[in-house]
Image (cartoon, one colour):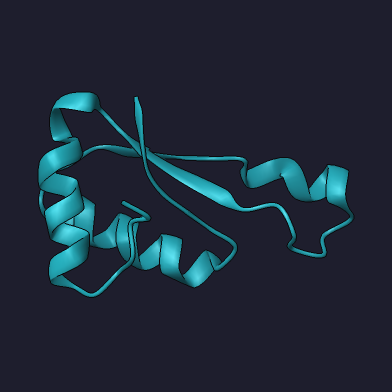
Length: 71
């Protein structure tokens, strides 16, 4: 798995996941339950991961929709 994006914005993650699912690209959200450790204040970012072979296409899907990928 390769990191596609990292953000504190849960709506951005949801939008990115919907776009990727629309393109049949599997993705996995990591660090979702870290809020238990941080006290739900939202300082720890969530990561969206994709398979290495899908990373190039997934990056372009997000860039085409003006979603920053951090790359």
